[in-house]
Image 1 (cartoon, one colour):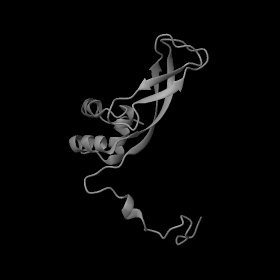
Image 2 (image 1 turned 120 degrees about the vertical axis):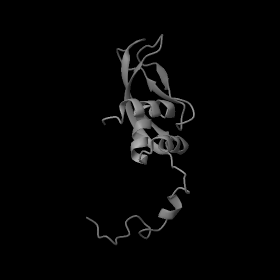
Image 3 (image 1 turned 60 degrees about the vertical axis):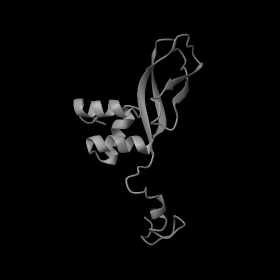
Image 4 (image 1 turned 90 degrees about the horizontal axis):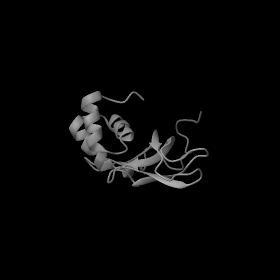
Length: 131
């Protein structure tokens, strides 16, 4: 491996870390990825462009666009891999209610696609997801 004092990152170790630190009580957005099944909307045909709506307000985009896979039609279930960011204020809201670590809160919000109410309910009903 590289020597501990190497300058590979192009800046002195420890420098600039303070700049990325969130202000007291502030959470940074968290980039996440989730794989989940979605039912194709009416009229879907292979190659069509369609989308899955994410819960509003807690992700960096409101929907995930994707192409209908070959051989798939309306009402079929397809496995979608979605990449999105969960907004910091939603992570903070969940942590305030559950006292979870940031990592666990992000994990829970990934499964609910940023839906804080569902994440809280799931946490108190079922505990944490097993992934």
